Amino acid sequence: MAFRIFTLLAVLALGVSTWFLSSPSRFPARTGSGTLESLPGYYLKNAVLTDYDVNGNISIRIHADRIDQVDHSPEIALTNVRVDYQSPQGQSWVLLGDTGHVESGGKVIDVAGNVRLEEQSPEHAGTAVLHTDTLRYDVPDAVASTQSDVRIDFGLHTLTARGMVANLKERTMRLESKVNGRFQP
Image (cartoon, rainbow, N blue to C red; front, top):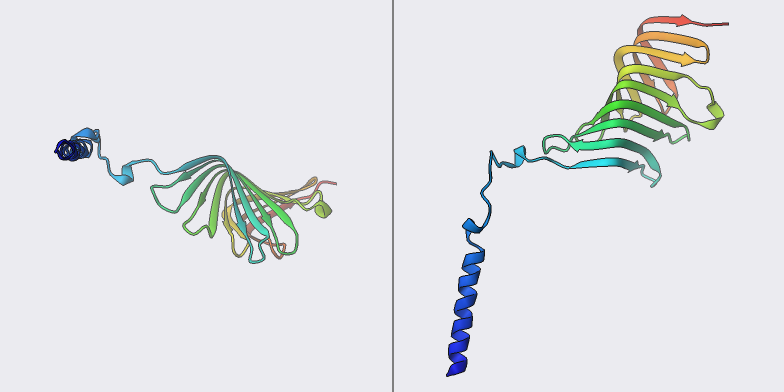
């Protein structure tokens, strides 16, 4: 008989404690709007994002001092960006900028502020360095483009233009307009 009373009291205590612990009044009330959209998304510090080609080789690597999710979407914002691209032919390119934005799906990277693009292959030491304010990089096609002013430095020589399209796989570049060159002896 005492065992039954003890069991009944234990079950009753379990029920009361479960009700008390799961009560909404035990959880702190949310202040402000409290919606998912108002809460911060993810962020990463000193991060590296790496993408691989179909053979498993590194295709592109994005370094950033900070990576922030944009409004709970698949888009990300980058701070102090470095994009390293390795072409299938073996050329290595580096793209630097103050800020960047990766669109949904990671197919396009927009870089802005003190943008610099140059080839890093050892056999092409002293190659041209491209400077501009903004640059759009299409990852699958390896095409960099801008509608902004462009300055290309090659040793003592300088070439300026407005707008440019560069195919990094084929190592070709097309300057759009207002092309002007200065070649120092």
